[in-house]
Image (cartoon, rainbow, N blue to C red; front, side):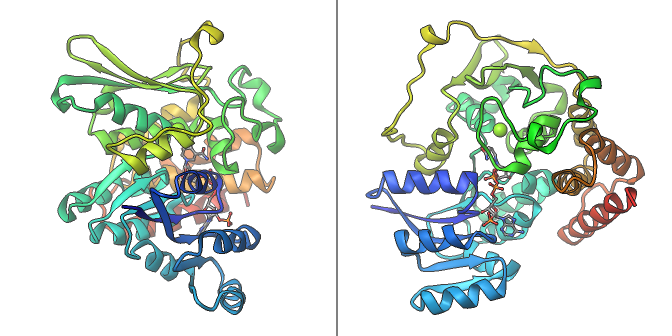
Length: 381
Ligand code: NDP
Ligand code: MG
């Protein structure tokens, strides 16, 4: 029987690759609903191709225009529309929006006991405890899409949690891995958007260059797999072939390997616990690759990674501050209002100013999120 899929963030990098998988496996999956932001060209293309039942866009004007062209489809908009789409009857919700806008739709879908394939790491970083607690209470399943977390999930498969001693997340190092801090002073937006291994949306590409992405992933791993921060390590691995590893008490290490292609972890989340072939499968050829490299992380050089560990250990609202400050700072860097190194500087200043609230409810998180964005925007005025 075909699985019904709702896809949030369909017009983004993960969204388009999820659509590829649905297209490649027409018998297995039906796209019954999706959300987009502002990309109306792709929205219309997907509407014609997949003929979904519900579509959400960001603005009311775009929704009105779509309604004229697609009268049979339920067209909704804005944050309320995103919730309506996320909770639309389906087997799996794929959350591939960017940023903490994904939080409330995720929490509402959890209340319906859904299976949620989550790419939207900002939701887990900003309010992971609420997501996991609520998922437990409502019997919802959270499946990782992020390649490192899919690798950890696959490496932990069939093992008892208490047998595992350590998570080892690999990091490619992003577009600036071979530059010194001094060389980062005047890098441009274009330089930062040029990632060596992965083709991704612009926000996460900047996050990879600053190493904030790996920091968010450390927190994401803590939330998803319940390991202490002292038992989560990061290892530089420039080839992005080993996507992450789990060490067990007997010193065995399980790893998941593959060519860097997000369609593999996305597909695994859609088919779990089964696997489907990849039609254009790029098989891993280790003989051709020859060598894999590993290196200790330098926390002086990649200060943002240290900040993320600090935020995670502080707990409570500190990870909300880390995420919101980063989202605001990255937006300002992309619009050329600040320089590259100011991203981590603004995050650090926002964290220094913040007094942690230990077990925040949703209202507190939303408040801290919006206040942090304002604080960071004001820091450069
Ligand atoms: P993109 O920027 O490419 O896409 C984001 C999607 O969200 C688009 O569909 C966009 O719409 C939509 N969107 C943006 N802002 C809003 C908003 N305010 N309200 C509603 N919708 C909005 O992001 P990615 O696909 O790169 O990343 C998505 C998530 O997956 C992120 O959390 C990222 O960290 C994570 N991730 C991404 C990976 C990758 O390879 N790209 C790898 C691992 C994790 P539109 O474009 O139409 O405006
Ligand atoms: Mg990742």
